[in-house]
Image (cartoon, rainbow, N blue to C red; front, side, top):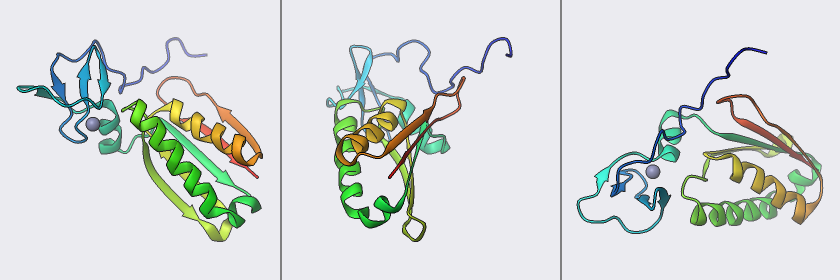
Length: 151
Ligand SMILES: [Zn+2]
């Protein structure tokens, strides 16, 4: 194994100076963490790590869904996905969905996220609601987490 793995460039080094607001999504720093609380007057603008990932198109996690059940229950699965991602995003501003690609003809969907917790959390919610199987590769350094769910 290589000595020292790549560090994650999207991890904030130190806490941003308060008060801070992200110009893209409006998230603000309160108590050293990103929140959805309103910005204070005179807040400095600083793009949050989630918006930096969206801007750079560098996901923290990628979830691949596939299988005949997915093909037959596309809409139900999308509903659960939207519900779960909203729950994560409301609680954790840095955990958001980035892109969603549907390939219904092949019973396949690929979803990318700005955080690893939401990537894993959405797959776990699918497993809870619909069964199936789930597998995850936890990578070294800055590579995205890859999770697969199939049924
Ligand atoms: Zn932002």
